[in-house]
Amino acid sequence: MKRQLVWLRTDLRLRDNSALHAAAERGPVIALYLLSPGQWQRHDDAPCKVDFWLRNLRELRAGLDKLRIPLLVRTADHWDEAPKVIAQLCRELDIETLHVNEEYGVNEAARDAAVEKALEHDGIRLRSHLDQLFFTPGTILTKGGTYFQVYSQFRKVCYERLNLGVPSLVPAPRAQQELDIASDEVPAQVAGFEPPPAELSEQWPAGEEAAHERVELFTDEILKTYQDTRDLPARDGTSRLSPYLAAGVLSPRQCLHAALANNHGEFETGNSGAVSWINELLWREFYKHILVGFPRVSRHRAFREDTEKLKWRYDRKDLEDWQQGRTGFPIIDAAMRQLLATGWMHNRLRMVVAMFLTKNLLIDWREGERWFMRHLIDGDLAANNGGWQWSASTGTDAAPYFRIFNPISQSERFDPDGRFIRRWVPELAGLQGRAMHDPSKLGLFGAERYPQPMCDLSATRERALEAFKSLSAGR
Image (cartoon, rainbow, N blue to C red):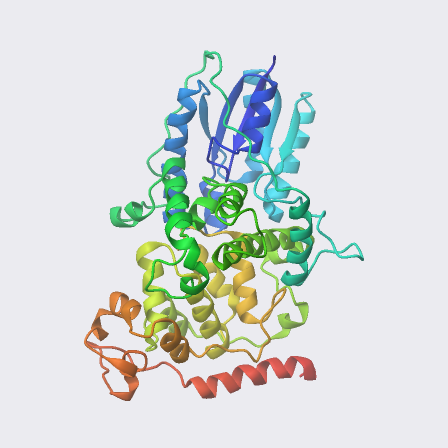
């Protein structure tokens, strides 16, 4: 049996790893991980996310060692160097087949195509495997043969397919015969990406065991009330599994099986929490299909091409105040400070802060998308772009442009007693009642206290409406 090489990317796990399983079925396996700091910087990957990758890679190496699968770590600073690095390694190791799990951005697709072409010269095959998704992009289409642009229609077809059969899980490989190849050390950090504070890393423990412990905790204790608590940022009412999904420490298939196991195998009925969580997994699926069907969204382009003509404002101070949580709107500031401190933000608040930036401040959604990617431990091109374009009313299945969240009413509705605000905006901890959500009523401002609201919500709402109306009027 000839040697197989598995190129690990966003699939840092042993269990239910399609490429790793397929490789182990064909012959002795060697694993490869490429460090690409130049490419990661180009993609705005957050230092805390790179640290999370490295921590998980170290955990994965320990698991591979037990299976006698060596892990090799090489560097290709940018992805255009990957074909040469991988082809040379394949020649050195006498590799028959390179196995990869599919990735979907335009740069990822171009990288894999270039690697495949380079390997052809040596008669080495590249085999790609479906792993991040339930369905291969291009297999969930409208009756006209085009990609869905509306989530609810996409979800309906997904349900029909899932009812015919749930994607199965594949086991971790068995231990293999020892190879005369030593594993490489995984670096503690990579140049250009400073490790985050220890307290941030401690919030996101690495490894498959940690990920599955979170799945069990969520499905056993939180899932049954997920529908009711997932919008409340002060509650531990969400799965907090997104970093593990983004890094591939956990597969969406594993999450789907966990949800179904807790809902008697039902997709659309039974526990409303389980149904809601499955819908969130399908949103994730939808946005990755969009990357393939509409590659312009990978190129910083609006999905709705007519919105490219929107006259966005550029105001450096307004942008920086939003970034640093100095807007004068407590729920916005609390959310932005949570992001800076933890590398994560509650999903409801991602929508609230995004609408505030794009509608009230009328600042280009791409500025917000970039800021999120530079700080999120779960930063994912498809989900992040999809969420920002939804909020900005420039994307697929977008919120109507006239739907603009009011941060004060959102705060009163989803953080009614101000617990979340008190945690992240301690200068307001002594306030009670409505003043917590709108301290401007009390005039408690000044450099040493809390900033005044940076804008008038009513006036800026009208400005946004006028900007969008101008598009349809052709002005």
